[in-house]
Length: 323
Ligand code: UT7
Image (cartoon, rainbow, N blue to C red):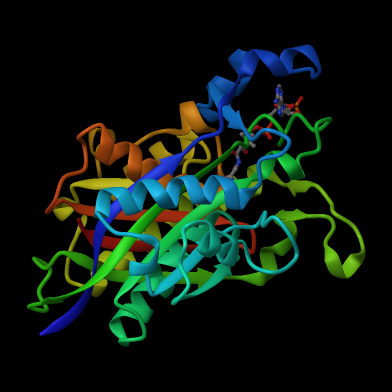
């Protein structure tokens, strides 16, 4: 008998304001054509000035709770992946906790940038497997529009805001890969690459800062490391690419998604793609894609889903889920 973290609900939220590529042509030496062909992005959502990351996260959390037919106080733990929390402290997770009316659980943020949701899922799985929680709300939420250098065409056209959430609940499985729930995780980071993607400010340096990225180098690492981490996670439970129903990758760049799928040996007809509509929403991108994939009928109960992501750190990882 094995304790498994089974997905019971999923939901997402995107801010109302949609910004098409053409809007950047007014202020930058760029074009819809360049952005589309180099990244696959066609539009992204930006939060309203008074909307914070925890606001977006709360909307997504409520949608996931609805699907799971649960209330705020049914949740034992909230794990929120973000690099753009409302305040330095307390955590955005505790703000969501208050907003959903949870008074009995515990809540904390996880910061692994674009790999944040994979890290959060892995942490939530460990809480459930070890018996420290029965029901965990896992959220990825970001307002990257707040940390853009609007004069840097190499970065500001790529990112967007949004949130996605998943509810995990403990169930007893048989210990085989036919069990529903999280079957395997693989986490990695390598701080030697911290200068490839970072924000050039923070609390300890008395500044806010903006995102800086050596795009070409991150691209190179992404293609190599994403396929490798997905393979490693599948290997851990004796599964391979042929067993995979859906790959749900971090949505940074369609060319990275295509190259990784090819390296992994999975056709693009088995990959969920939302990058055209959301841009890169960092830790929110995978739960957003999961929620879109479920709501449009692509991801169904029993499917084998593999998520993989890489971001600042560098930090990267993958999670294998029997949906
Ligand atoms: O989520 C975390 C992980 N992040 C990523 O995975 C992002 C990884 N990197 C990428 O997605 C790609 O490297 C980018 C989309 C950022 C850039 O694509 P690229 O094909 O690597 O282009 P590049 O950086 O080599 O730039 C090619 C040219 C350059 O001009 P020159 O030097 O050839 O004259 C850039 O200055 O394109 C220029 N360029 C632009 N041109 C028009 C860069 N940004 C733009 C732009 N519009 N927005």
